[in-house]
Length: 103
Image (cartoon, rainbow, N blue to C red; front, side):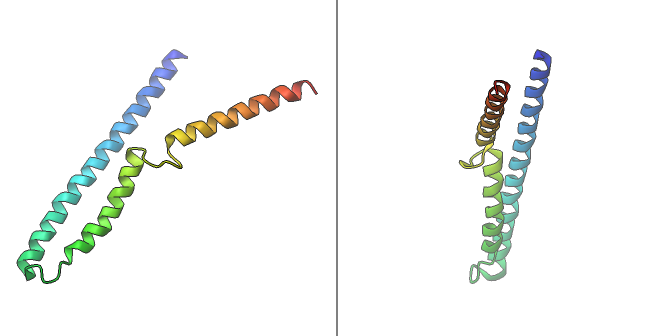
């Protein structure tokens, strides 16, 4: 059983590292592409119309949601919430099983 727990912890840690790599890769792409678009925008019309901001805001919303998922920042439905609910339901089932035995 101890080996199973170690393997489970390893797999969860590995999944977390993969998610972090994906987030930082996405963030790096965001910074590079948006910077490049800003430079192109400046050379094309010298900030008369800053169209690159549409990309910055749109992709930025995606980055925010990616960060919320990666860093477990959702206070309502995060991983802690899932674990609490699982424990609550397991405890409830265990209690119901005990009470049914005596009936």
